[in-house]
Length: 148
Image 1 (tube, helix red, strand yellow):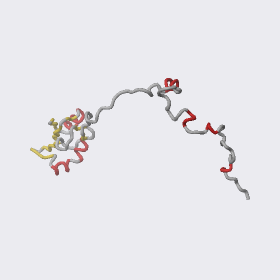
Image 2: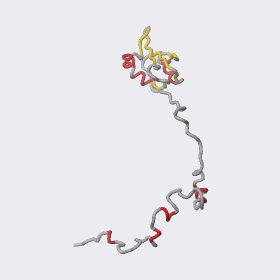
Image 3: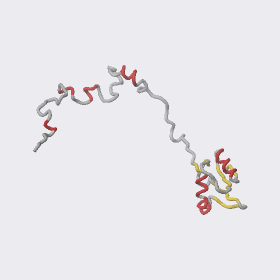
Image 4: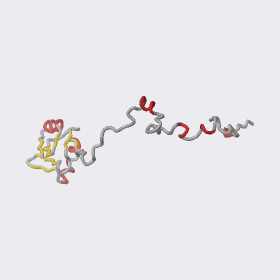
């Protein structure tokens, strides 16, 4: 019967396991630090490498806009308005007046109406802002746009 010796038997009794001198197989200190360590002050051992391969590594660039200044408008698409019309009629966001259905998107907390999808019926849409594409589709379906 063949017996295979375990791999763990290799290099037993060897001080350095093929790494040469014991000092050579230590942590980051033997390599001049991990990563970009040592690119800063004093000896500049990695300075030539930094200048050649990572010239943008040091220094600052640009800025971050404060969250208080950033503004992302809340939006709704035409297909969402069309699909949720029965719900809007139930909760009072949309109402019928003189045979026309009027959808008030300002009550939904929506700032902008976008033009994805299509309308299956004529609607009067009240909004703060409507994109040109959405406006064309609303008018093509026989509706109109009222800016609030």
